[in-house]
Image (cartoon, rainbow, N blue to C red):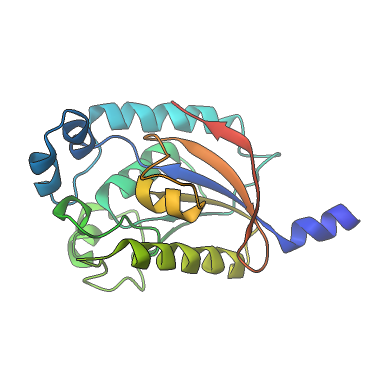
Length: 209
């Protein structure tokens, strides 16, 4: 009974970084200027393979051990495409939120107007998302504040089992890791958040593709 009471007070969350985009590939090749200029890029072929692979691996997890109730996705194209691919054929509802988007300081991390996203992703609901939902010239301090706000947001939701599809820098700040980016493309980590938004446990699910 005490364990069930504890479970009712915490949130179990799967944190997923999006699949590889062309900007990630260019950054890895040292072509920083080219990468930075790609406005809101989608995932590329490698990213699609990564997302499909993660989806297969998660099918062995989601269910009895992790009864997923909601998926919360960043509105960036690469996150939305990752969401669609990882959770293909899933009936779990998707909520699009600007809170877990990437640090908005260069064009590849600037978003796409909601009216265009509605046309590009007709199977996803963008209810409540402002037309211009992203920030530009965002600072590292503002990113940390947004990550803290998102922890509180997750703690306030009614669901217990959630998945979040987001970005490397944001997720690194969200879990308070040191470093620039500690998440690989399509890496998935499980965390537990208490009712005040504090991360109280990391694991046991950790998947890299």
